[in-house]
Image (cartoon, rainbow, N blue to C red; front, side, top):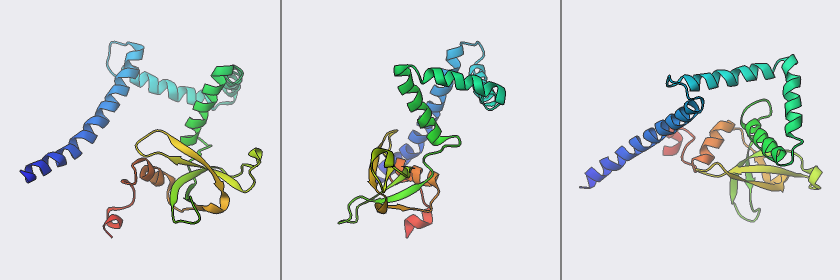
Length: 187
């Protein structure tokens, strides 16, 4: 009976992540496709991808850059819209584009009297604008969540690590399960 239960749980480890991933991709695909209400399945998704790419091309040309700049200026003048727009834009810029924010993985000593440490990413090297000389801001992503905490800590408690930032993010978001090679885990 134990062996049968073991096989069942091994099956869960294979089926659930695969099915959940496929379902999420399917849900996103059908939601985007459904927004355009076209009779051919998949064409709405393709049109959306092409449209986003074309807007990216237009936004990077000299002539239309001014138009997009004007639109952005208008969006940043409206009270509630400004908060939403700038927050979303900053979040998106943190992951893609020229201003990636999660590219400096660090190890923080949380308490100098103990060995408690945490992994995170430096998001600002200087906080003098807050009156906090010799402090940095470090973002700590939460495991299995799209949230995190921002810590303000003395720069002397932050140690840069020479690991690829995407590997550190995968390690953190997975709760320390993903990342590193199988050989390292067996040591």
